[in-house]
Length: 487
Image 1 (cartoon, rainbow, N blue to C red):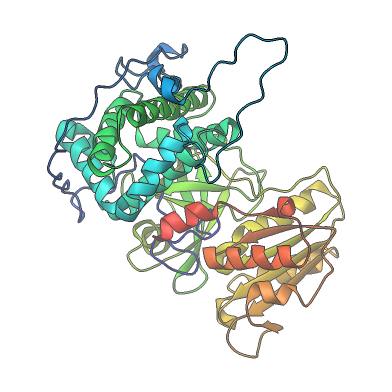
Image 2: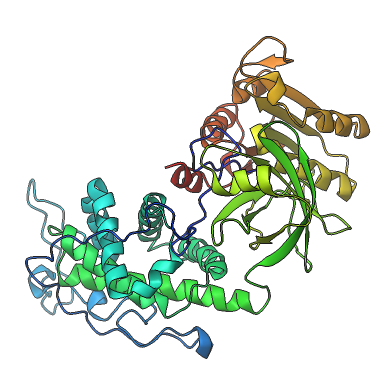
């Protein structure tokens, strides 16, 4: 399956290529879009000089970025400076009884929030309507000053622009939520290892970012805002650098994997089975990024179609979509003997084996792949937990893996599989997949798992919450990533 869930960069409902460009992905040379955009005219006034920042905490020497204004971890001193004296509260005279604060004037405006987080969000709000122009200018600055970095980025930059702005927006939105920010950026830092990203790349990105923001965020930009962005970016980059350094100690940047089986299920869906060159630890329900030899450094996400196997083999369900570089290569060109590359496993749509809750699984299209892996995982643990699978497709013949699921149902009395077909009266259930779930239940003792197109996941979550399943028991991979990929 194209994952996480069915991330389709090409707008397909399921099984399409998912753009795994991150900030440092690169497409094949010579593809359209390889020319760097021309930067806009420089700002009328120069940006304020970057304030000095404290040194970063020690990291392994090979993972420490070079000395630049963007090296430090955390906000700079001027970013954390106090408010101007004019806004400071008056000092109360010495007295045995503290003086009561003056009552606020009728209709007085609330004091403006000048925290670093507020300054970052103000900048992002200003540039959001023109995000494409801002990010185009960012890349133009980066490639003109550092042309050697062009090779690390995708040849077609349209999707890359969406991903960068989404990543910045996410990081800035959670700048005051350390746990969420660290988890999000650590995953990005680990994932960028497969692109060859190095610590010395981050300062160049930071300088280009500051230049683009100062050009287009003229209303909100100033010394305080610039200092806040320097502090935020140094924190962002250091988290990613540290995560990559830590990951390097325990795992390779990628695995080589030989194709050992290739089975066409329909004219555009194939089950591809590979053998990694070294142990590949993962959990049922997770996904991996894949790269083919025909499109070097172009990576796409696909979910594992089985639980970990004793023979170490890995299977993926791949649907070829129009203009899908990796998906078409895997479906129509890959054959036994070819070697692909695998990135590290990722995703949290895994089974909680500490509970006896049942599993309510919704799989749309090739989203049935990780659902099948979850069923195998429950069977391997030997606990008789109820598993209810709703397998959705547009038409009967799109239920390409229904025979496998029905055989599993015959082998496991705790498993129930219900096909749901959008069009036509021939299926057991007809209509939208989430709506079909409402005909059964109750589901208050079940954990829900959703895998499929972004629209199905959104609708499914709304439906499940509406029938009483709490959100903390509904599992799926990031809708934000799915949307970023589809855009």
